[in-house]
Structures are given as C-alpha cells and as structure tokens.
Length: 76
View 1 (tube, helix red, strand yellow):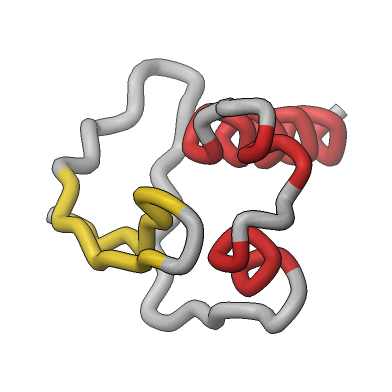
View 2 (cartoon, helix red, strand yellow; view 1 turned 180 degrees about the horizontal axis):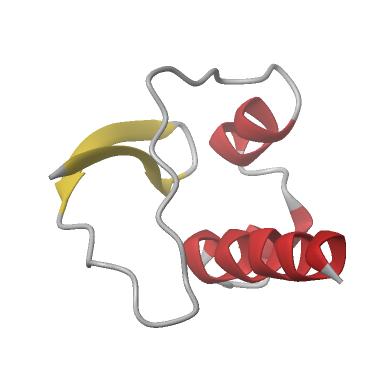
C-alpha cells in the first residue's frame, strides 16, 4: 500500500491509500521514504488555477506520462 495526495476538486486535498502493482518485465519500482509538496505546482493545482485541470484532465495520467517520458529520455 502507498499513500498519495490527491486534489478531488479546487481547494480540496485528500490522502488516499493505493495499491501499487509489481513492476512488469522491463519496469522498475522506485520507493521513496519522503517527498515534499512544492509551493508551485501543488498549490496551483489546489487553487484550481492549473491549466490542465481546468480542461478536466486527470493529473494522475498527466504526471505519470511526464515522469515516464523524462525517465525514458534520461535512460536513452
């Protein structure tokens, strides 16, 4: 189990427990002990001023995609 910070709607934040699947062949699972909440991205998302959330896009999908693209680019 893992805990995630989610923003269900503007000005609302929650911590949700989530199952983390085992990585498939060719994938890795990176575990962290601590993380942070920045005063930039997260507070902008919380306020509802983040452009992609205004379009109704799911931040989990967007951030997963961005992290994957950065990781793949750095491994090439």
